[in-house]
Length: 295
Length: 281
Image (cartoon, rainbow over all chains, first blue to last red; front, side, top):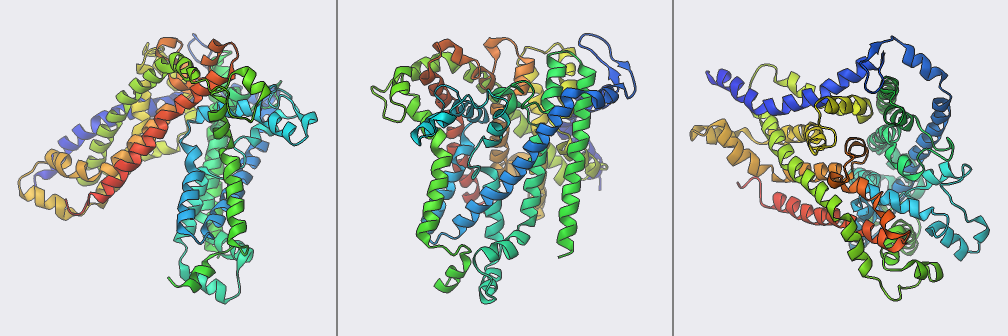
């Protein structure tokens, strides 16, 4: 058939703009980032190969060490948030008898997703505001006026306040993914559970959770990737402060590059974060899969 | 479904009333910030400080005019970027998706792998090099600094979704058009594109969301306020109101409206696309 040749030309025409853009703005930067992590590269100067110097500097960087422990706490907190509240709400929604209430409440729970992320962050900054913030107002309403403070402005509460963002952490993508998972569990499974006497919370633990493993695995991977990469919200809420109370590695990278001009050092932090994210994701996927196979 | 199995489906042993009450409580907590944003956006500072929870007296609708006056340029700038990026992403990723699914040529799978492998490359790795690259093209502080990387980045998911969708279409449809003498480009335009409207709508929504919500990239590449986007602008505009909370919160509401409208419109297009009957076409 002569279609093969003409297909090549046609395919190339159809693919060319996409491939050019991806090579230029995705592959090339990734390669540059990989290489320049091993260079001394300051703003306005040509990069100079220095081998592992940047990584040795990272090991001795006090700021990075402190930011690492903050990051660990945030990661654990985000994993716990993703694995509890949305799942609880999904199970509660599934046990509603009225389809109309079910639909109405599901829609209402995912409504906050429509609000732009930046507006949500600024709203939370307002909730934690020291003078007239919503949290302080609620505390005063319930007689806890002595507790009021600028929640993001004190080093003893700032990190906890960041963990609290999004309370009660019930809606969003995680809820949708759990609901999709629960809906796909066959009714036969639940019927036979009822016959075997596995009802209520026991069924949730013994039957639903194991069957939801693919969803849990996906959400854990997304949370790991999202938490380790996201420094925009911390930049908005606290700028990493007060002091270093909410500093995280990705924010450290941003400051090194765009405030101090140490581009090479920042690229090294970026590369390290990429390796960590990649390793954790693969590990999480593998581990989940192995457990599923052993079932 | 029988009433019996209906009952067995419910995992939680409490009565319906308790379940409903718990859900409504959690929902109330989730929506409280949004509700307070709407309520307080209509109050002057004096009103907020003396009467935090009560209804605004009087409601200050003029705050919305003030906020719109301070924000419209940022919203327009975001709109310009979206109008430049979204049609481009849809066109290019549907063309590439078609080539990678319905055309036979050597290296096809390798190229597709090369595209989706980018899903594994996080923004954190490429942020600084991309900045240096855009700087070397002399594009810093121009709209191109936003448009070109968004156009490239949006295609990774776009190509993946388009290729998956086009691969799933029955070969008979394509064969019938080829027998009628249609060229591949005609088949793409007349058959593949119309059928993939729901997929394209999904790509459009996700690309719009990505551009609208992006903060760090415009923050580092754009310093000229005249072309700055909403996400960065909204963090700065409250300085114009002498620390008044009302107009600031009104600005947050205004900034949320485009996405609410997008979801309302996008859902309809999505449902239409599905119900228009892909198989009948």
